[in-house]
Length: 195
Image (cartoon, rainbow, N blue to C red; front, side):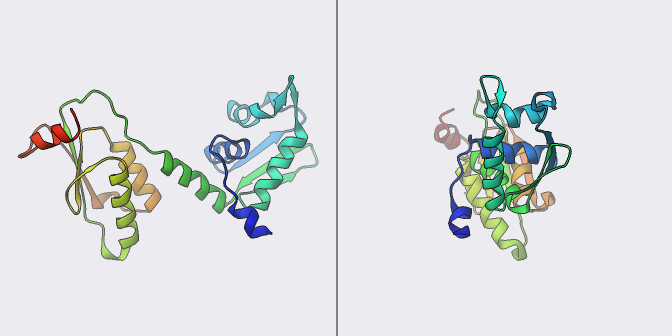
C-alpha cells in the first residue's frame, strides 16, 4: 500500500505541492500557528491561502494534506503542545520540488539582442550520468548542437545553466559560456531560430 501511495502523481499547482514548495523556500523547516494562521509571514500565508473558506481556516483539510505528504515520506510534521504545527521537508520532498522545477525550466524567449550564447562543456567521465542529463536538458531547452559538447542559443541562459549545474551536481568550472555577436556560419542559425 505504501508503494502505491508514494507513486501517486502530485499536481504542480495542488495544495500539497504548495506546502512542499514553500517549505523548501523557508529552508526546509517551517512552524505554522494553527491558532492564528493569518498572523504568519507572507511565506506562511502563501502556504495556507488554499485552506480558507468563507474566511475560516480549514484545519482538518490542512492536517489531512500534511498526513498524506508524510505518508509519502515528503515531509515530517508534528503538532506541538502550544498548538503550532512544525513541518520539516524530507530529502525525498526536496527532490520532488527540484524535479518539478527542472520540468518547468524554460529559456525566456524575447527580442534577440543579436548575441549568441555558446555553451561548451567538458564534464569528466566519472560524472557521465550528469553529463548526459545536462546534454538532454539543454536540448530540451532548445539549444542547437554545433558539436557533441558545444551548443548554442540566441537567448539568455546564465541562470538556467547555473541551475542545471546545481541540480546535476556539476562543477560550474566544467561549463564554459561564451557570448558573442558573430561566428562563422551563424547565418543558418538565424534561420533555424527564426530570428
